[in-house]
Amino acid sequence: MEQEIYDPLKEYITVYKDRFMTICKATFAQLADEAKVDEEANWATCKEIYSKEDIVSSLKDRLGRWHRVSVVLWTVVVIGALILMANFSDPDGGQIAMASIAIAAALAILYMKVKPMQKELQGEHDRHQSVIDGLKSKAYTQMEPLNSLYDWDILTRMIAKTVPMVKFDPYFTKQRLADLVHVYGWMGSSSENKSVIYSHSGLINGNPFVICRTREMVMGLNTYYGEKTIHWTTKERGSDGKYHTVQHSQTLRASYTAPYPEYYETSQLIYGNTAAPRLIFNRRQSGLAGKEDSRAFRQKRKELRNKARDLSNNDFAMMTNEEFETIFDTSNRNDNQQYALLFTPLAQESMTRLLKDKENGYGDDFDFDKNRMINTITPDHLQTLDLDMNPDLYRNFDYDEAEKRFYEINAEYFRAIYFSLAPLLCIPMYQQIRSQKDIYGTDMQQHSCFLEHESLANFWGQEHFMAPNCVTNCILKTKQTDIKGDDSTIKVYAHGHTSVRRVEYVTVHGDDGKNHRVPVYWDEYFPVTGTGQFHIREDNTSLNEDAASQHQRIDYINKVLREGKMQLYRRHISSRR
Image (cartoon, rainbow, N blue to C red; front, side, top):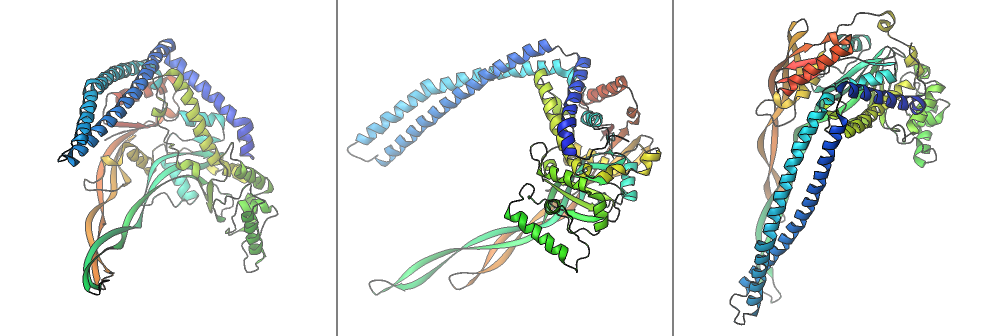
């Protein structure tokens, strides 16, 4: 069994943060050594690029200043023209003369000084920008040996070396999905209104997990607004004692609410473990961690104490550590005995420290749901982070900048993934219980599951599959056909909506004493489905290949992409439309 982690925050600070950076630097050094980039030549090229960019920046500032001068002069011309028009018939003619002189002077400066200077600066700017573009092309050519070595799994390999208890799959396999569904009871894998944008599966000390981002369609409501202006007259007695006709107007406003398809993207960590198999709870962020002296904390603790004293409530008994119970409120749990088995005093202390720390971790930024043997962590910090792990993130024309960004990007991603796993690592029993397959071993089917196919389709882009009249996002669902060994065809169904413009007349009572029909234009949405397909060839040999053959495969993949063929290669799966 791998080394267990019972205080993930402390272990990150004292062990894993520095260990990951050491491995990250060693990984980049290995890639750089293999790429054999001429660093001196690249440094010289980049020096030219940055020097030219400084010149271009200066030219932009000068162009901006001359543009402002041009605006002032044209303003003078316009004001002068307005004065001329207003005083055209003035017999004195003084203002006309002054306006004429101002217009003439402004136009003279504009066309004799400003315009030539703007043209000259713009030409100089374009020439320098053209040189920069050529230099960047040269620098990218110098960096191509390194840029071509980056692959989809580079981060997950470094994480596995840093934290050996965490192992990532090359891709989401059918067997991994079958385990989560049939052994652990995962019910969220096949919703017709959800599509997987990306997924990364693996094991935590022998128990399966999936980090995934999904797009979900929910039929919500949208409110549309319309207005109509009405006019009427009334007879009113004036100060002279006579009746006069008075004109009135009023803008009537109305609204109409209709169904509207809404799309939400959510990143979550799904984890299966047989510990406490009957336990159910839903924990939401409280914002109370570290606020023990606040009124809100005391109020929440009082509510929990009262709930625990309520004899009609047999499912909640408050633990001794009231601080933990308050900031990690799971009072909706269904089994206190199993809950206590999971959240031992050690687990409570670790979780409390995790929730309070915002310097190294993210503090209390996650929801934690347990539905029997499936645990779902929904962290806020994953919602704004693209964990697709596209190797294009690392590509750069500057060797020094590439190295710097390689460290920064991977450190940020490691921190995000580690602290998504951290709530699970706080629970000792989750690490002490391993699946039977992990203990006894079994051959896993190395074929990708439909969730991996959905992520491939979304990576390619929903615009390749959507119906021509679709006006919304799409939920991409897939079906695997024509399976021949590692080759198969993936049919894609893009479920979206088209819209038809409608008008609803809403009756509104006006100040004229009458009812009026105010038109409100709204959109009625109808489901439409687009289709398409692509072919995949699964590279299962790469699971055990040596470094040379792996890099040969990566070189081939990048060669295909450079040639512009209609192909996609994502991690260990290649796809062709």
